[in-house]
Image (cartoon, rainbow, N blue to C red):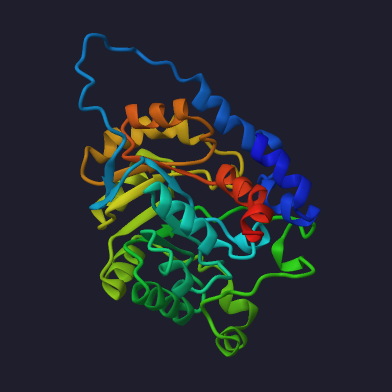
Length: 305
């Protein structure tokens, strides 16, 4: 909360409004955190903790912490270097970075940070755009694809980045490619289905993690269709009036039965929440807004170095 307060003091109002915006009401944001906080533990005693470590691995990539950075759009609004600045912090902390389709930062700059990263994919109506972006992500070292299937509810123009006075351009498609696709080509493809998992895997040679699963039956279907992992997610409260990640996680863990790695995000705001997610079966968690606020709060100091 300290980072958010400091970030709001330095960010233009339209940027902070976008970063904070829920799908429809503050309930969509607050409920996720409240339910993570409501979880209670059954502590064990007299267990040997000498070998205790926070290190783990995610789809074979070693990390020093189970706290990963979620893909978030338009990070250049928080810091001039956007995901490149975030990547430097991720590399220093031994974590892993999720990179949004809607990044204004070239993949080459992100790769230069040496942070391990996964590319978050929105499948566009013009599949050629998605194919180009995936190929370029692979070329620059992406280690997995995060197929986002819980498209965020529409944001009002007052907080939509498309209406920013300095709206960021996509950093990994040329202006000619963007012009050729037109606005319709960039829209989300409503026809994506289970076959999309294998389509992405075959074109990239990378494992595909399905991001946005909130049901046990969907989790099972995705794994059976070839998903290497799942992210239990409400899109940071932007999905609308849904079950929370904290409530959905246990049934999904049971349904998957260790046949894929499971991650969680949305509303995680403390180490206790991280511990709860892992205790319930998550391999690691993704954190979004807290590190985005921190990026903005530290931007002035970082840029003066």
